[in-house]
Image (cartoon, rainbow, N blue to C red):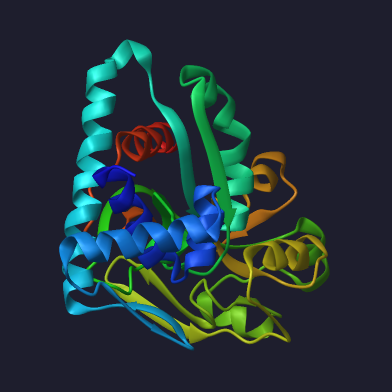
Length: 292
């Protein structure tokens, strides 16, 4: 096994946390992974991994080797892409992560042209409304919305969407439309745990009005918010991305349009300490163009 292959095997072991998971990702047997790591530690004359009942943990030397090995592998992949030239296009696998509703509405339906442009590229879309550990999950790039909780992330802002109060016309016909932010308190709100919860702040010029919306339905995923609103259960505060098809068709309508709410940002997030691959950069550029 050559030195670069051994590096790649070690990187996968650290990222997945076990020999078996690394073997599954690499498509080889677990004994081959164990043998590769043993040979690597013998060649370097240093212990890289601590083995316990809890799994594998890199030693201080192992962590330093992992960081440098990862950079070396990324740079080698970049060199391959550059050598192939732009005309050859990108190839291999690209693993991305995105919120379920956003990807369903705005990413997956538009993958066709991107895949046609890069016929040698395969894409795996990991759908999850919660933030994943990019290194552990082997994610090349994640699309995340809102404020980034980890300031150490390597991120690039690629889009922004307004947020508005909205519901179905049928709901407003039955319960009336709020004319002021305070009127929202007389309505049933569909509360999205990951979308700001119940604290809503409205702005109009120099005026700011904050409320704590009340509702009997609280949902942890955007698909649930959509289902509740479209079932006429109440109004909600949401990005226009979340209800783009229904806003276009008139199936939902916005209210309090003379008040502004904080928009929501979309970020492309890359694994910390890793150079963004050419495949990830190309995909992010494509998504940014879609939203633009």
